Length: 254
Figure 1 (cartoon, rainbow, N blue to C red):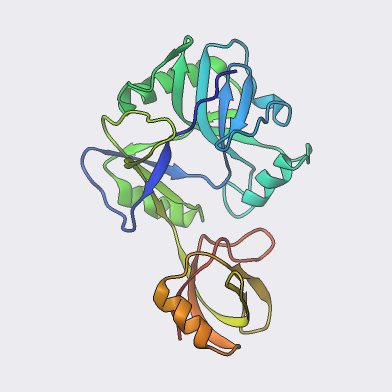
Figure 2 (figure 1 turned 30 degrees about the vertical axis):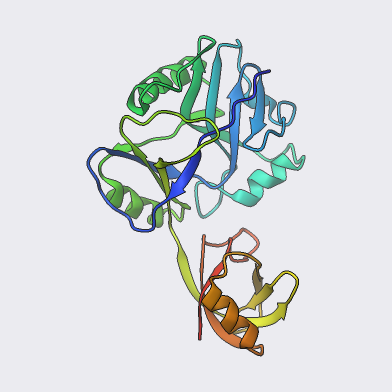
């Protein structure tokens, strides 16, 4: 098995509709490379036996995508994907494929993205599996796609520069994630040190999760001066299926 490190994303705060860019949904699951009769995560964990329905015949193809589980309020549910990853074989999954790394045992990483997308459409149709699906994309109309993402409570979109190559293991500005943040006023109920960890709750007292990363210097200083309970504003990637904030970050201490 030849291990190829996946290309990584840069970051863009604002949503735009730029000429020369492709835009596609950002699914909330587990990054997975599938092909050559095996699968593995972005960190190199072999998952071949965990997701047998994603394997297909032949050893001439390597695909890059996101393993997702169907959600109730959104097309994807991260906790469902993690449940399957942890061994719950009753959890249904699918692979949303957005790129092709090799074809007919030869790398296509040096092809421009629009050519790889065309090839990908062809190979997905040939695989013809209900578990392996093509990620849709649009040219230029990033703002319109982002509106659809918000309506469907999805994580965000990814912008990819037309003509860009696939750079294994590199974090490139040619690929940028744009997150569909939700914003909330919540209560800091507890602060722990070593490392700094902030426990959050609703104004009704319901536990909403904890924050241990992403503090700016200014936010950190204000938190250390505060005596809980006090109010903060957070941004999060929506909600988990268990009713907790998904990856919250504190952006203001009130």
